[in-house]
Length: 483
Image (cartoon, rainbow, N blue to C red; front, side, top):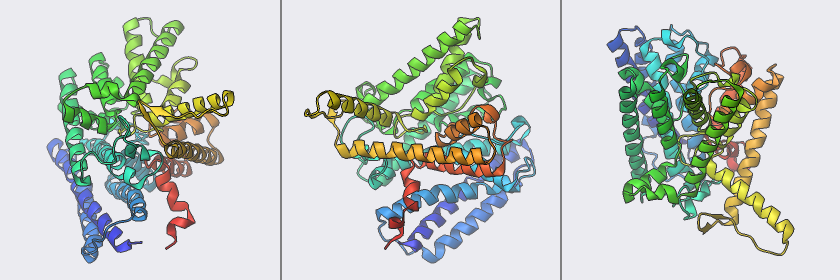
């Protein structure tokens, strides 16, 4: 294991992270909210620590193998999220415990959007901006991880990128070099963020709110600058802007790149995962709309459609923005929406969950097994679009699903052991492992009331969900650490 090289890379990352402490400090100067000093102290601390880690190992530049790749990917999130908690620990308002600061930091960087903060409007502008910025940076990290790094490690069904099939199953690299791939992804991500911010501003948000919410929208994070989330604005126009950009961010960024390169929108409609993703959004919206109208929750059809569309897209893409308390909706809707977050966005998007393409492959595999029961001697292949997928891809998806279920059950049992009720435990794990944010029961509004043990369990769930399960799970195998 090339430990010195790994320390060199992590030192560079921490030094780069220090730069992200400066924008909140500038925001504090602009609004004179008195919250800038902790960010300047965090900047110096991160910069100093990063240089200390990098300088002695600056000449260790050997090629990394797959094992080092796994370790760096995990440490990327662990180390950066931990250092991102420093300004939150130093702040006087809010005055957070170590557990709460780490929970908020990990929730931000993994784009989970679960928060322990209340009375958010009263916080300094610097803190509000920092939370949103954390999600934006985490969202970009996810894209580069999913499209440029994980395919090369060949894990958890992400071999799909190598299978030369349409949409999410493209070649492992969109461009010949990983640096070029990351650069192109940055351009797309930044362009979408700017477009989203302008759209929010035109729809009626202030410049500050527009920028902050564009960060968490494109990252599919869910943090807001207001306790009432998007409901604070009470604007159907803003809701539509949010839904539009959530759907865009929930689509594979490799597919966006293909559309930009070909200058044709046809690529979207040729992609099987995209078509299923849109079908899910439409089906959920219609179900919610008809149940809300039948139950008399809303008397006005326009209001019912607005609420149904917003909550359906927000929860199913794992953003977690809300305009109303969907936990209070009638009959099956709250649980239906929580279950929709297990599907999440497309592979290679900023969305959480198991990803649409994996769910599609699980369904196709189920159909194949049923067909085999009827025709035992027949040979059935699984196709995604017009391409036949090799069995190793399907096996990887089944392996991912079983690991996902096992991690979910273990986390839920730990929460129950910590004294949480069953509905809260189930939805809290779902909200964190799917990087969704809000749950039901005690965690419908925020996670402030749960105990510290539960918060640490949920931090682990966030990491497992964000790192596609296998990336983190492989570190727990003895074979990984053998020379």
